[in-house]
Length: 369
Image 1: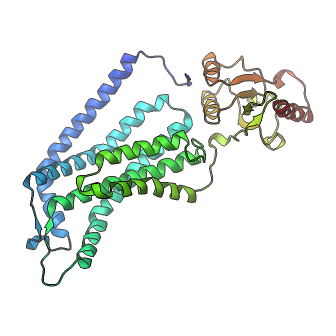
Image 2 (image 1 turned 45 degrees about the vertical axis):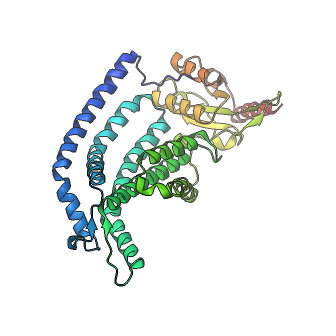
Image 3 (image 1 turned 90 degrees about the vertical axis):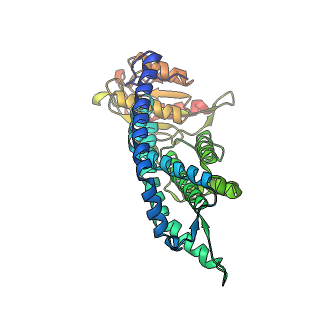
């Protein structure tokens, strides 16, 4: 399936690769500068955080049993802080690079998930390090305290657990926002094995497998299951799906050969010149989109193509014409989705409201004959 959007510009593949290389080089430069800065500051940050813990770290209750592990932990913290510093720029570069090749609903989903997920994820991780983790350590110390026996903490394990839980929180927030937006924008259906849902869960589970530290290997499977279950549970409490672009989704009906078909009607007003009909007076099983002028509005064409792709439409019917006045790129994109494009020609016919309603009903009845 090859789609052509109105903003698409034919460019050689080499230009896309060069653009990606330029953006990637800029990000690597900023990441390198951030790494040097945090390498210079990391000892002060680690010392300040350990001193703030409710376990008397300043009195020697925290020890380093594995010097090599401590070096690895220091560099893990440096890398984490450098990545956090670079995230805003990386988000901007990702959205700028991908913006031109996305459908309207995909663009909206990516922007919201990326900006919202990064923002809320960072806030949640900061809360974990400053409040949640110290409270957890204090509670664990009180529960496991044995009278007459001193408690010593391994600094390497403390930071490994903190880093691992930070990644888990960040990925969980991304999953919740991603699934919720996909549901509201009708990018996925309620089926448990919807391809879009599987892609989200699969990607985040793979990232969690890469990020999980050795200190959490014993509960990796448990946290992985929670990474799937918690977003799904939250998603069930969210508002019901609202189709983007005010479109009504088509319902599947059987045609004369016993195949399931999906029909969508585009009520194009042709700048007020085309006779119209309301969505309420059309068959409820017929998909519906409405616009002022498909021929003149490139954004409306992109939104219509978006609806055809998301709802897997088999037949697209336009009110005012037969589709031939539309740009060739749009018609080719519709054809590449295995969708038939046709029209009723109301712009050239004198019809009454009842006749127009009857013609739409006939379309639905024919699909069931």
